[in-house]
Length: 497
Ligand code: AHR
Image (tube, rainbow, N blue to C red; front, side, top):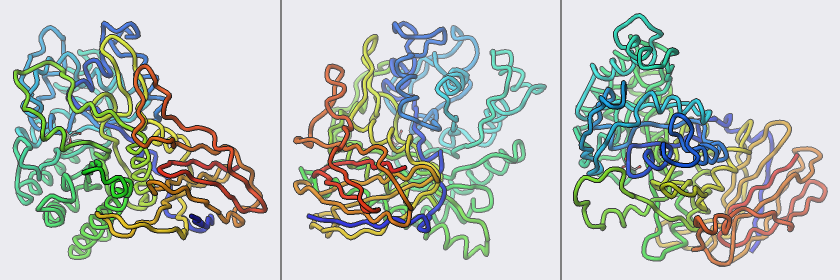
């Protein structure tokens, strides 16, 4: 099979937004406890943070981290996680049927963010709580000093304000599973009033209204329209959440999941713009794709319900394979090609819970297969996103009909041009030629491929590098034309200088 791609610096979509490479830390399973935080771990620092996980987080290149949920936030009292540890209450976490000790909370998270070099992104509880607690949390975080709650923060050891800029107004409020679930109108009103009050306290905030928790929700579309009718002037973003899994051994459809993500984004942009048009507003609402990943959700939904109220139980610990990583690469391509409107995104989640980083309690930390496409995109997507013109063979899939084997996007920063490409064919290698003549004289800097004979190969603590990008010696660049073979089920990164 052969495919062709044309690249031109004039095909500019938008800048690469650093926040595209966000991640997510929720009080869920072992994401916090024995994930980022484990004071008894041999690598723990004086704050109890696992250095092995901090190191992998830096290698992953995560730029912003959403906290503290997720479903968890809709029943959370942020004050519980502040102040002297011995006085913090233990509570039941209804969302995940667990016990929350509150040993780790807001100030610890902010310290962790500083050490990890990431921007914190907070969510407020609009499930069981509302405007007042959101304002309290904002005062605690963002006011310098001289008020009750800012002074309390200082007394708790955080002299400088946390200066959190980006705030999610609740989480998945369209979902019947959400504590305090609301209709679109109820939620829209509450989000608008909460956001308006938060801006009175700190006008520089960037606010995210909850969109649908998935494009298959029965209220999808209508939810976004109603919520934005209420919040258009107040918020900057509407959120999207999407999780993908392979159903019934249908690998071809799974590998093409980015087609669904493309459609999802286009639909939300169209809905937001139609509300803007009706309101005669010049403002554009962008998308915060603040939960996305491969997640074998059906396994979780079919599992026995949790008995008891364990502390930090192993939950949602999906063990990813090569095809999951290639699919995730396709999702990254989709996010990047929509950089004109998707200006923030969070891989859900960071550690242990549907995560690129896994840990053993007290033991090793290692990279899942999905770590690699994310880390490479975060490291090499720089400058401007370039649309690529492609011709590709197509194959039939049961979910999406005809699917092009090749999916690709590029970025260009003056010094480096990087092409990110997946071959979504389950069994056919693809010979790709790329016309790069408009980029001027170039040399191949580095070409890597993530592939292998078994699409279901995985990494483990014992074999952490079984699935990892390898140099692809196949690539040739002659007179501005690149030729390379992309193996079946592969993620490829071609760097030119
Ligand atoms: O990321 C796991 C869960 O997925 C989050 O808590 C929730 O927001 C979503 O349904």
